Structures are given as structure tokens and as C-alpha cells.
Image 1 (cartoon, rainbow, N blue to C red):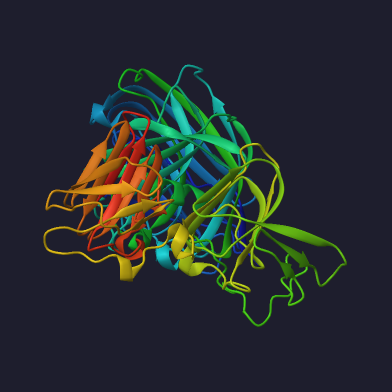
Image 2: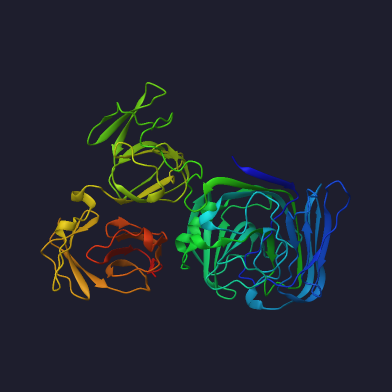
Length: 557
């Protein structure tokens, strides 16, 4: 059950440039009466760029929100930005600036008026943690959370570039009042925008909760941190929007070249608007309001999506009204008839081999006895594996429920042509996707490696030198040479390549690939720590890379 915090007029504002936020802010706080209603107003100008205010809506002495006009890139000009909070009516922001002089044109936008929750890295205000989400918190320890905002935007100058968006900073530690470092990450989720786009380049698209987003990435924003922005292809100047953060964070992690995401802290949740540009300085007139903001904290882990209360199914009990496996089930080599304990109907589970993927609408029933390295899915109504709901998330094989009768029983339900599931791994059978330890002897002068299906097994028809490995396929007479490379290693481009590595110390990452097979396991377009890679074969990771684009990418570090 979700813990929920609803505060009328709670607004998280955030801007999407690679902007340098100020570290200097002064605190102002007032209350209108003794009935727990907060009312506060703060105004910034080029001569007073960093005023701020804290909000204690329930009058309990703890901070719910911090509001900041944050004119971080304005050093001259006239006019002001006023942020006014009242618990009864909400947050109102009025931006009226003229003849702006920017501090740094490379920052692009002029300012970022915002409201935030948590412990923002850039200053020592707050923290604002009178709410359900425990921030800051490591990604590995944090449950998924969502933010729901009701807003309206009034653009008084219809040509003004602007955006309105959520943001967070993913940082290595909880120290504050400092700049963001090169091994840390800025992540933005835009709600509305005009004549602005994310920093860096557009690296692709993704559909999350039925909405299509462009993904923008820069590997060196501001002081050199990594930057991601998700821009919805359809957007509006008003409405109510719910953002579940886990899918966005996991999607960014696929494309990141920064290591060890599970140990990054989510520092804060921010909502605000960026506006202007180096060529748009004469008049910046924009107003927006937030009438409500809801923070919700779930029970599933944000990275793996497994329920904190139910993460496995006991092998001795598999009764489930939706997909139970009973001892009277009739299982053949190609399918499994499963009788439900709650009805007389039965379904047939079709055997699949790994790796496996499927796109489309409908209800499907599959089973596999293979060894799953991970599953991933999106735009599904349901994905039940051995009684556990795992839809629309990335889950490692070690976090899956236990096999039942030696199998994973999978029920897939999708409503769209783009509903998707993918299951990476290898078959349990040594004949189809495993490596026999008894048949993989390696001498100092030569060794044998045979490719079959999606695995590597040894044979006596190929030799391995210090620089390359000749691999003979059991299904054809062709052979390929695995070229030895060392970490750190990265490659961009189209084509098929074969490499081997004796050591991958930290992680692999890839994007825009057709396939990336490492020792028989399909691992394309995901970040995988070295601890979760398949075991070495003959002392090596054998890597087959297939990409169709100049921007197809693989890295091992």
C-alpha cells in the first residue's frame, strides 16, 4: 500500500539545461495564522538572485518544501521573479524580466524557479523531508516512488523558449552545499516545453506508461556530470500528470557510462521551469501555477522492481488464483497443461528457449527450464512469473521467484502492438546452451571453442593464440576469430565483431545494438555489473557484438 502525501499547492519545479545552480541562498519563512496554514512569498531580481523560503504546511515544525526563484544565470537587467505559496490556493510563479544579462551563455537558459523536496546537493537549505519518501537514499535501498502534479502555464510571450519539468540529482554521497561532480548524474522529466530541447544529443525514444519520450543525453554537462532528459512527444500547458520514477531511472541507467548506479543517492525531487536563451533576453514573461502535488512511496524496489514484502514463491506452495502450478499438472516436452485451483479451466504453457523476446497484444503462456540472467518488459498489463507480478520492470535472475517443478511459468498480458517482454539467459541443457567443463580443456599452445546455438563449447578444431581465438560453429564450416581486448574498452559503429576479454573489472553497458552475446547470454542495451556477468569460459569473456548504426555502442570498464 502506498504511503501518500497530498499538499494543496505543492509544486516541484525544475529546469533542464546543464545549468550551474547557485550555492548561496538566504532563508525566509512566515506563517499566516496559528491554524497550520502556511503563506509565504519570495521575490528575486538581478540584484538579489538567491532568496528562498521554506514551507511547513501542517504546522508541525518540519519542512515540507523549499521554494527558490534561483536566478542562477542572471547578473543584469530589470524586473523580478515572484513565487507565492498559500496552502489554500497553491503555488503561483510570476516571471517578468527584461534586458537580461547572462552570467554564462553556455548555460543557455536564464533561471530555474523551483520547489523541491529532499536534500538538494547544491545548497544547505532544508532538508525538506516531512513526507513519505526517504531522501536522500541509495538507489539500491530505495523503493519506487511517484509524483502527481496538477498545473497550468500561461505564456505571456508566445515566442518565449521554456520548459516545465521534474528533476533529480543522483550523487555519490550525502554531503551538501557543493557542486555536482563528473561521476554523478542529472535526470530530468519534462512535462511541457516550447523551443527548447535537452542538452547533448537525442539518443533514442522510449514508451513509458503508454507515452512516448525522446531521450536526450550529454556526457559532460556543467562541471562534467552526466545528463539525461526525457521529453514527451505529446504535452500540454495544463493538466494533471503522474510520473512513476523507476522506469525513467532504469532507462537512463541503460545508456549511462557512469559506474555503480545502485550506490548513487537520489538527493531530491524538484519541479520548476527553465526559460529564455542567449538570444532571447529582451523580455521573459511567463507565469505558472501548481494547485496540488502528491508524493507516493511504493513497496517495489526502484531498480529491480521486486516487492519488498513478496520477492519469491515457496517451492512447497504454488497456489495462486491467477497462475498456480499443481502436482496434477500434465507436463509434456513441448507444453504444460496447468489446472487452476480456483476453477476447472486449464491453460497450456508452451516451452520457450533462451534468449527469448516477444512484442504484441494478447495473453500468452510460456515456460522455460533455462537459467534466466534477467527479464525486462514494458507496456504490459501483467507479467506473472511463478505467481509474482513483475510487469514493466527490469529484474535480475537472482531476484526471480524459485522455479516450480524445474520451470519458470510465465503469463504475459499486453494490450498494444508495442507491448514487450525479453528474457535473457541460457538453457539448462548442456546440448543447447551450456558449456561442459569436461570438454573445455585448454593447453598452453592451443584450445578448442565451439559455438552452438547461443553458447560456447570446446572442440578440437580451433586454436587460440594470445591475440585471437578461432571459433568453429557446429552448424556450419565457417569460423570467426575473437580478437583479444582489454578493459577499459569501448566501441561505436555498425557491423558484427568478435572480442574476448580476460577481465571486466566493473561493468558493461551498451545501447542501440541488435545483439550483444557474452558467453552465450544476450545482454544488449543494458547496464550489467561484472558480478552479474555469466562465468568465464577458458578464462575469457567471449563477446559477439552486432550493431546497425554508427551510434551503436558497447563499453566494458
